Image (tube, rainbow, N blue to C red; front, side, top):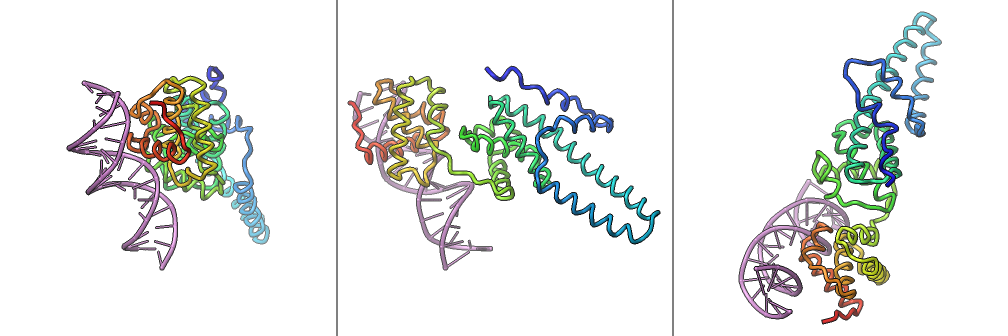
Length: 272
DNA sequence: AAGACGAAAGTGGTTGA
DNA sequence: TCAACAACTTTCGTCTT
């Protein structure tokens, strides 16, 4: 729906040839989004110190230093731009393949900028960081995707995405709540083609479970899957454990265990 | 034949000494 | 840093529909 117009930034970056330095300055322009405090303050500090040292030692030296400083700044911003150019196009590709709405992609892009400016990408693969940013952005927007779902469209594996994600969260001091199983119910339900009624029923079950503390420490996807399974039985549009497990990317065994737990602790009667 | 059930052993990530 | 631990998976045999 909103997806047709995804290319305000995209096309500019994509046609990027290694030979042409000039274009880079134009690339810098569209970033109306903020540069954040940390990167900025660091830059200013450096400059001040350099200028101080130079003033004392004479005008010619001052000029030379100023030149060097400029070169250095250019090199750095150039490197950042290169990184961003590649990363943001990759982010956009993945985002649209996953089907993420615009606002989530913007959050991801913002996170990535912060990551680059804070030097978080140095030893790591850009792909991994981009994937991690997308994963984090989904969670921030309360529309979580599983690591498996991100992995499907990423060139790096789940493990590395997870690692980069944890690193990102730690270094940027992101405070993210554990994902709420309810956030998975609608999406899983849609994939299964169950009715609205069943989805709502599943959400009620999940909320009850949360209230009774049955969810802490458990995988949210398993809970969501089991809730949908139960709801489908109660609403008379039975899904199989297999089907539910598949969309939630858990095993049938997990669905069964959660199912048993929920039915039993919430006193749910299953129609025979 | 397909779905549901559950036991048993294995895996990867978190936690606490 | 290492070992214990819980959640989850894999595998597989057995009921039930």
